[in-house]
Image (tube, rainbow, N blue to C red; front, top):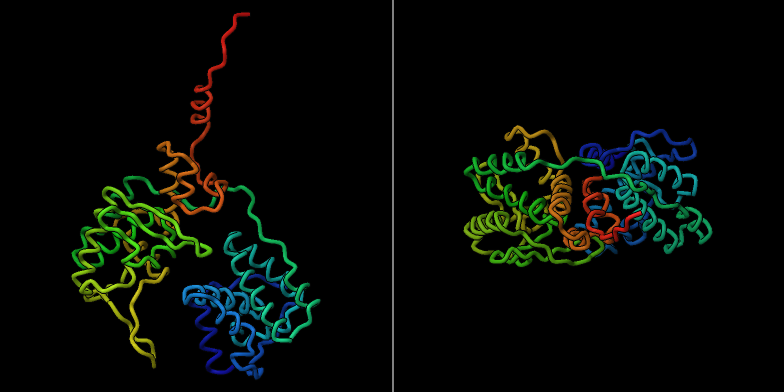
Length: 355
């Protein structure tokens, strides 16, 4: 393996979970390096270039790296894997591996990336139509109606997390509280929070214009104390940046400075932004400081949905706030049990007749 490919494979091990699943021998492809395809003839690179945003390209590149590592035991990346050699026995083995390792949404997301690359391989003339259609003939990974894994945070835990943030006098303290305000206070996904621009937020009213899955846009709200936290971070951010546009959430250096730009190796400075992984690390740090048992960023959103339903909010309204495509998805977060059902049944007036 070349130095470049070795470095890339190391990146997979540190940033992307390589699937520890034994695949059939037919799926063990050799690492294919230097197969001579220029960027405009490389199926994976052509596919990634076709995506509409840098965030989408980054996400799908990671998905392709997972698939490449799965097929080769970690020896290939999205650049070095010979995508044009994949056949149905390879793709069906990948689907089985992804279904075993990832939740349905994550597995299907990666399968979408795989289909996209194979489509480019067909368009570029590397495979015929029959081979292509056989390779992508994969059923979606389904998870049934199980309640999503994870846990809800208690009010005491949320207060402890916010108090841990308040104890930090650096900009990171109020910035991390703003993360909680977005994830729990407004129910945003982690990816939505880091993509939120300053001009997407009305700090006076707490209204948020959220760009969610599938390029769908929705209106969400951070009200009350959550809005106050966002205003506090907005003021700190404005003081540090001079009111510059860009992402609402910004990195904070170890010296307590708000980072407004970053320098890519060999490139020009570009606006700084927090990553999804950085959000995970910040919440992990605050949980440790607050003595709160481990949770994920999605657990904040899970708690947001469950708490609204517990408080009696209409499930269709909660669906819209959460940005779910179907109310069925929202219902999976419903923690209300038989008592709520009995109370609902009591609302029905059945005429009483003596027998």
